[in-house]
Length: 278
Image (cartoon, rainbow, N blue to C red; front, side, top):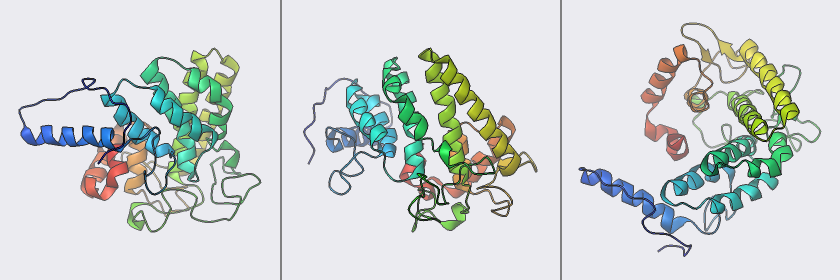
């Protein structure tokens, strides 16, 4: 079984002396070929629409085996304008625009959607702490419908395991996506000669980082980020926080070994396929 979307043989190949490794690569390559229709989807038969995280996983995977970047751009454009419900997924659109630039060498996709990309970082949901609070009801905010849990992937029940992450009003992953997105959009703004916007984004990034360091950084030992404001989560720092801070490049070098050790102790299977990919 497979969908029928154009596929060019010979765009990628892999071969090694290990038959098992070769089989794993071929299974992965065929999954991309067989499972992708004319847009990336959460599921071709269940939630049949593009999700931002599928852009991260499926579009990146297709880019490894096909020289076809228009396919990803088509779906990116849709989720930029019509984001899905998780806060982190909305924030991820900045990363997708940045990945498109590195894939194509062109920043025109970011140029076309820059105001939406900035909006999707959810900076408008900062409260008096200087941190994003996407668990409170604010006018036009991400939790405008109801307060509490259920607006983020990391607090979406039944998963993840509560031992992976402590819920609070100021989630570490939300701040991390916003800070990383500000940096990437700032770089794109510079490429587009939008100097005033680049300076504004740099200022926003500096302010958010200062708030994070003041309220979320545990300086004991080699240092680590708490799952939220440290006083709100009992100074807990779960594996989810370590994983995302590592991936987004927000840990100082001295803190990286301890974070990697925490991830290794948890295990790849425990992180799930999405966590394993990033």
